[in-house]
Length: 300
Image (cartoon, rainbow, N blue to C red):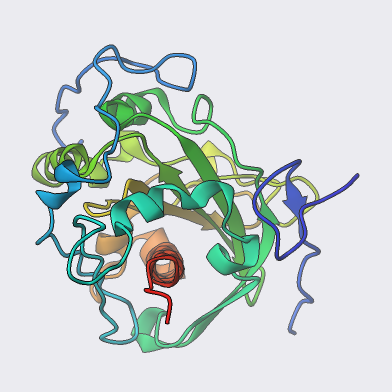
């Protein structure tokens, strides 16, 4: 069966990468309708399509500060009119157009080094074991999370699953490319932040369980820790969800932010699964950032 090459865009069937060698309630907050969304069933009041001119100009001063584990590596994407003084194309629009052309290895590298990304600032290394084909969002999220994300719409979803160096942990990283403009992404970001939607157990993302890999048993019951971020200057929702590779169920999943605290004693915290989710999510966002910066650089 043909598979997408490492330098080709996402397409075709799921890629399964050979496994690496073994190295020796919170209070419920009502959510707005609709309860489903996909390409065939968009929200009843769809977000206005992104425009390359005046709409994104209103967000010209928005800067996304991305805190990266293991170092003070920070950057920014400035949204603005593509005819501005910098002469660069609109970064927000460029980011939204990447899903159909970005090479697999550029967004989800085969190996990700997480210097200082583990518990106690220990180094981490993750190896990609599967890449899902680009898809819609109909079956990719639990119903309540679909409802929460519905205002942004679903353009495309890209996902990959990684394992750690010991092959005992698995983590799915996802990038949801939305149909929203910068203003709508800002509204959604504030809603998630103010209502704590990114920390609710009933709003955890689903993993990508790739058959024939150590993640084959990585289902909904195996979710242990997660992180989810609604970007404000790119039409993207980034997330990661981690669990054990042996298929054990986790009774009390914990947000990565809490699982990474020094005094945390939960199973996800003690295993370092919060560090896996946050570390991989941060680094995939960094890869996306680098790609957008390259796409918007002014030709010399």
